[in-house]
Image (cartoon, rainbow over all chains, first blue to last red; front, side, top):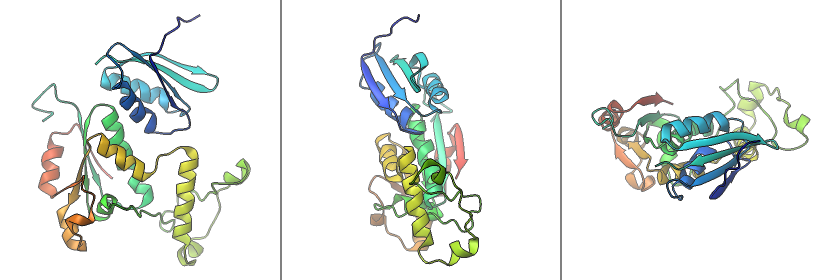
Amino acid sequence: MMDVIKEDQVLDCSGMLCPMPVVKTSKAIKTLEVGQVLKMIATDPGAPPDMEAWSRQTGNELLRSMQDEGKFVFYIRRVK
Amino acid sequence: MSKSDPNAPKRLALIASKGTLDWAYPPFILATAAGALGWEAGVFFTFYGLTLLKPKLTAAVTPVGNPAMPMKMPFGPEGFQNINWPIPQLIMANVPGFNALATTLMKQTFENKGVASIEELRQMAIELDVRLIGCQMTMDVFGFKREDFIKECEIGGAATFLEYAADADVQLFV
């Protein structure tokens, strides 16, 4: 049983293909305070590797990347 | 200047040389993705690519000369949509309006699949502060004026792009 992560904001990118999930995520994360958590939902199979690359490049922390009912769910903490 | 300042963001420098709907995608996808990664990005629009900076985008696609292009229908049952129609080049080249039809079908397919339109991607690139540079020489050759292009772009030449690209971490020609 995984710990429950509480998000401060939810961004649904279901149905969107590259590069929309990362573009929308980068926009959304800027509206959060440092330390807050964004939950992003996507259906694009390219989203998991892209979100990992996005996290490494931007320095924002990808707390969890998981699949839930056929969707990809990401929890990201704004670091800077 | 990314090379001289270690704290500067990474930089992407692209050349967009093609003005068709299919080839309009790579530069705008890469530039917006770079912006999302926190990178600087700049695109030099030259030759046919320059038309991607016009206020009204008219980029079309032509299946003639693109023999690898899948010809699929964006509507109907899944089995029907998955058929790759074997349309002879002779027909594609000679039936009036075939390019317009193929363009409409490609736009509809992309929309159905969740791909943003070129208009949307360009607007996002502008919001992400992507540097859009229109080629002065191409303007002169084709008889375009500054006011034929969106106000968000700048106009420059090869030296303008090379100076920007010299300090880029990734440079690509599309």
